[in-house]
Length: 112
Length: 115
Image (cartoon, rainbow over all chains, first blue to last red; front, top):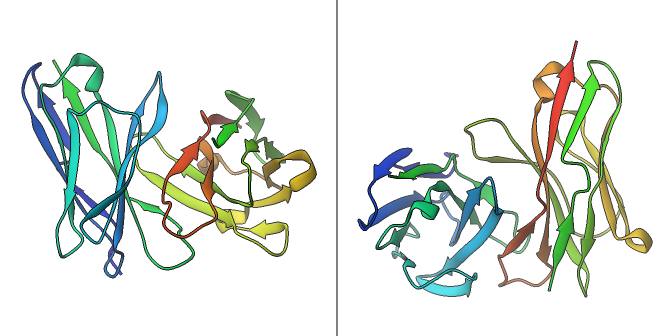
């Protein structure tokens, strides 16, 4: 079974721009979660989607948004980028009652 | 609110020596507990998990962890480390009810292996 895939792997943007990151979950998984990882704040939960509905949301500003499609693929969008948004964005998928999350390789976003 | 503490930011161990990484959690109900490992520039790989049952859980790569409810701990151990174990290790806690997929992570412990 293929693992979680994330595209692109690396991205460079400038302040004020917006960016869209994509995540394809493991086949059969219906839940997709997003995390931000920075040296200063560590791993922080952004949001989680299940069957195209956002079920959980972390403490991030409204500039961070996401969506999930009927095939469970998910995208997250960050608008009006700030320098502090530079981070590794990790996507995880899970399925079934065990709730184990399996992570993708991440997208490294650099904001200049 | 759930939280995780990994008191050791950086640990250095000789190759072949034993290892214990500490993890303490705070959660009001029965937790799901996880250990993940991250190599530089990579995502997180699941080492092992505890949901219920036997408090000593075995994982991949020779790792094990023991859930101690009385101490709110879930320490990771390995009998003999290999140079390839050098990485960052994260302990995480999740809610033990289906529908809450939010994991709360500790700040991580960076493991260095010396020959």
